[in-house]
Structure formats: C-alpha cells, structure tokens
Length: 266
Image (cartoon, rainbow, N blue to C red; front, side):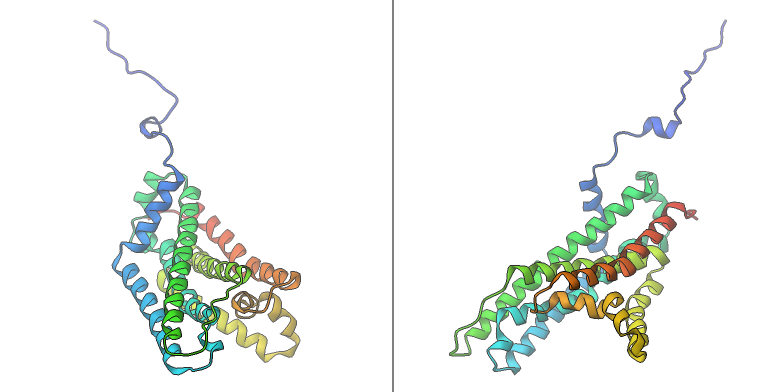
C-alpha cells in the first residue's frame, strides 16, 4: 500500500488562495467609507458644514457692501473652514488603523501596503473635492439670499482660474494632513502638529528679517494662501507653491510612506 502524497507547489498557501488584486477604485471607496462612516468622521463633516453655513450667514447679515456680498468673496470665505478642519480627516485616514490596531486586517486583505496608502491619498483628494463643491453651493445659496436684501445687482462673477486655484489649495491642505498622519502614525500627535507646526514656523520667520525670503518659499500660510486670493497667480508664485509643497507635503509623505512600508505590525 502506498502512501498518498500531497501535491507540491512553489507558492505559499496564502498566495495560492489569493485572487486577483482588489481594484483601486474599490480600495478608494473603502477608504472613503472609513473616513465618513465613523462617529468622529460624521461629526467632523457636520461641524464643517455647520461652520461654513454660520460664517456665511454672519457675513451676509452684517455687511452691506456689494463687494463683500459678491459670489467670489463668499466662495472664498466658505472655503476657509473647509481648509482648516477637513484635513483632520486626512490625518485620521492615515492613523486610525494604527491607533485602533486594525491595520493587520487591512494589510492581510491588501498585502501591498503601497496600494493601501495610495488609496488613502486618492480618497482624501476625492473628499476634499466634494467638500469644495459643497462649500461652493453654500456660497451660491448665501449669494442668492444676499441679493434678496439689496437693490444692487448681485455680482456672480467667478474666474475659472481662481476657482481652480482654490481647489488646488484644498487638495494641498488635505495632503498635508495625510502626510503628517503617515509620518507620526498617531492621531493626537499628528493633529496637534498639523495646527502647531505652521504657526511655529510662521512665528520663527516673522521674528527674523533675514528669513523674509524663506517665508515666501516655504511657508504654507504665505504661498498657499495666494491660491485663494483674487490676485492672479504667476510663474513665480506657482514656483513658491511648488517649493512649499515639496517641503510640507512631498518630503513628509515620502518619509511616511517609507515608515508605513517598513513598520512592524504589533
């Protein structure tokens, strides 16, 4: 009687069982759900929407100047709360799994960690785009209501270049949150540093006149802020935005990606 022999293969059992890679669109959808379907995510989105509505209501109710009630001005005002608070969701997208110790399940389903991180970045950009559009709708509603209480024709003009630059500003703000999250992998620390680091750096460069030129090229509150102003961007300002993005987003995100790819899962 001969003993039965098991078939041999060069592949590991887990690789054999694995099917085709999960499509990136599905990974992005899952990451969006992670950001929105949590209590913290929902309340943060509600808070952002409520703050945008409140700020617009205050502006419309307290100013009588046509320029202050124009659609372009209200659109600029509406984007500010979004750019300040929404990146917190970018931080949480990069850190929550590590804080809650669920990252092992994620990497079991998506063994290539780089694809998981890429999905988080794309999901953050999608959410920032949706928030940008919603804020624009809020500004349009506020502008329409403002036109009901004045005899002056409402100014609805909005340059496409300015609208696109504002969207870029929202993307960069969101990516800053994701980058800091991947570097520190701690929600509390990354959120604190997201607010503190630009202020600390801005205070340092303001204190030394010799750093005035550096501020134009490496300060998010200076170069990125130009994107939401009505003044047109030129080549030099785009270069400043690019340099600032390299310092505050690309380098930290690269460092964070290296850490995520190599960090041992507890």
